[in-house]
Length: 347
Image 1 (cartoon, rainbow, N blue to C red):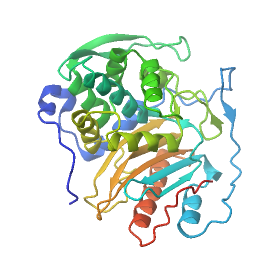
Image 2: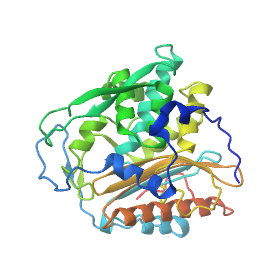
Image 3: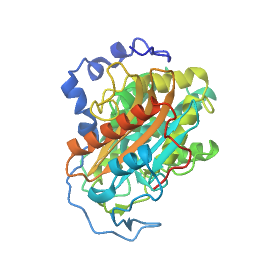
């Protein structure tokens, strides 16, 4: 069993009551879809939007002058059945690889890492405490696209510590929006990302609105810049958080510790990795897109920051399998002598 190197939060299961009651592995695997599921899957025609969606042609472009692992990764991330974006960085050696690494993909719930990081930065600066209580933001019924923001009402109040645990480990949208409301909305996350020097990630909507209006565009064919991240940018965020660039050791431990306990996406990054491999991660699921981003710890002590965003592929199960296969290929390559994780591989 890989040794865990981040401190665990204690006592949170009791604090959350029924919301944190034990669940089966099968139910845990469906949490991400339950929280981020689309409310109808009809894909609308593009509307006029500032820097709006643009067509993506899945032409099956192949990388030139690559061989071995790079060629294998390009094959696994082939865009013929929908866009797939990958970025990986070995934080020990600095070796990297990417496929469509600078193309935007729907963040879905992977944005929750940035939301929690923004809140924890406020904790470090004395604006809030983990013991402060905030109400869940509970969506009320509204028609798709009927308002700029989906209406919500205040629900049960919980400590910030518990809200973080729910947002990361169970992808709870109401807990996430509670934290997002506390920090000042998506614009506060964007300001924090800018101050951290992270470009290529942006938030435009709270989670309630994102979920209500899901399905407007097909992410396998269209690139919608709203609420998006490039794989390379997400790996940059993960790298900075792991290396302690922006958060105190205590706040870093809270976030990465929760990512270690993530219950969603059992068949994604960790789906094909050796039993006992430590993966600190966060999943995302919306209409026709699935993702998983995180930190994979290898037996030889390396840590690999990985972001995989998959669209299309015919089904959620097929998307999950593609993520798992890509993660295993990256893991296996990291274990070979003279690893092919080169610094600038890019399709």
